Structures are given as structure tokens and as C-alpha cells.
Image 1 (cartoon, rainbow, N blue to C red):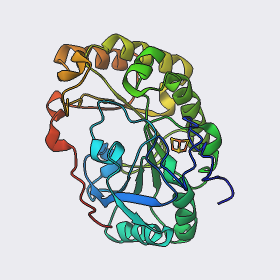
Image 2 (image 1 turned 90 degrees about the vertical axis):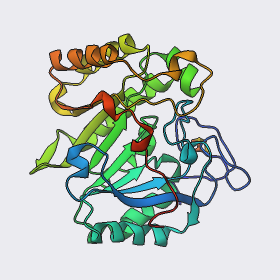
Image 3 (image 1 turned 90 degrees about the horizontal axis):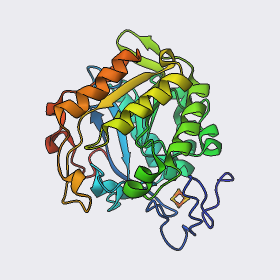
Image 4 (image 1 turned 180 degrees about the vertical axis):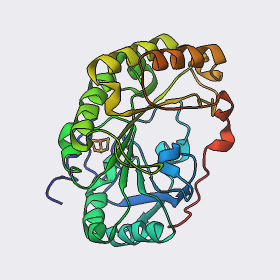
Length: 296
Ligand code: SF4
């Protein structure tokens, strides 16, 4: 693994310099690969899940760790099972055999030292696209390692103001990092390419509207429309925020109102974004998959 030093990890923008051979980094990653589940997943955007489902591999740990995370068992508690690169490569092929429309690598940045060799191993046997599903907190240098291996970026742009990113994810540089990461992702994929209803290449930018932050969401959309032509990617505007536990920030202890979501959706439509919106009724704990090592 010559692109990565486990003794001094700087794989993601946290650059926490953890010696992952002795202790876990901010993301929870050590020098072993941990996976929480691998399964056909039907709750992604329709062009990703299709009829058969997306072949999702949920990696344990996360380099962002938002305080309101909807998958805390994985991201904060690092739930999962240690497996080898060879086993990961077998999981990729098994998901393809089960009929998955794509391989969907969920939060993989901190485990790329295993994911990249596993992808290289199976590349010649894969006939489905590879989706890199990210929180958006990625360094351009690391993303360049994925050029040619990833077909679709499904990435978040969570916060537009450094103050919000610091408050909820201890990452004040998030807006700037997510912006340069998105530029690199677009450079790699180009405009969306469909085969029937399914996306084969391109970028989907996800943004979840948060309680009390609709104005920040609107500023983000205006920025994205001006900097990146809305024709160049798909926007997925999410309404599913659900308080999973009592939060220290009172505004996070409620769901989104219809007014909040529809005011942002209205802006997205005026700015001529193409893509996906959600029903407010999607904000339910039931829509968050449970993880118990399925498919591992
Ligand atoms: S990938 Fe993990 S260990 Fe490495 S710099 Fe990021 S947070 Fe730290």
C-alpha cells in the first residue's frame, strides 16, 4: 500500500496523523478493514436502486461523525466485522451475481487501502458501475486515486457555512473541502449518462435540508448553480432528517417542517436543477437500515 502510511494517516482532510497500527484515527479506522453489512439496498435514488437494488457495502467508521448521524451504530460506534481484501473482492462479485445494478461503496474514504486493491482485483469481471457514496469530506489527492475505478459519485454537500460545519461535525473547513472534492468528482465523471432509468456515469449531489437551516440551504443551491452548471450533475434534495437521539442543540430535536423543505425545493426548481426530491413522510426511523453483518 504505497499511497498510504498507516503509521501517520493523512488519507482524509482531517489529517489526524493517527498511527493506525496502534490506535484508531478520528474515523475509527485502524490497520484492519471493518465492514458492517453488504446487501441489496432499495432506498437510494431511483437511478441507483432501480428494480433490483444497489449492491451496498457499508463500511464501519466515518471521518465526519456528524452529531445528528442517522447511522450512528456504524459511524460513531464502529460496528462491524474485520475482513480481508480478498473477502471484500468476493463480496463485490457476489453482489453483482445477486443482480445489483451497481456496487455502492458507502463511506469508504478511510478504508481505501483495501477498497482500491479489491476493486482492481475484480475490475475485469465487473459489468456494473461502481458508486462512491461519500459524506463529501474528501481530499482531492485521495480522490485522484479513484480516477478510472469509480463511475458514479453520490456525494453530500451538507453544510455551507463553516460555523455550521464546526458546530455539527467539528469540521469548519467542510464547505471549502466539499467544494474542491465535488469539482474533482465532476472532472472525473463528466455529465450524467443514463442507460434506460439507471445512471451509468456521473455525479449526484445530495443535500439534506436541516431544521432551522433553510436559508443556508438556499445559499448553497445558489452557489452551486452559479459555480457548476446544473446541467452537469443531478441534485438530490433530502427531507429525511430524523432526530435519532436527544441532541445538545435544541433545533435538532425536531423534524423538518413542510415550509422549510418546500422553500428550498422551490429554489432548486427556479435554479433549474434536475434530480430528486423526497416526501416529508420519508423522515422516519424505519427508513434507516439496521446493520447486523448481513452478507459478510
Ligand atoms: S482517514 Fe481516519 S485516521 Fe486517516 S486522517 Fe482521516 S480521520 Fe484520521
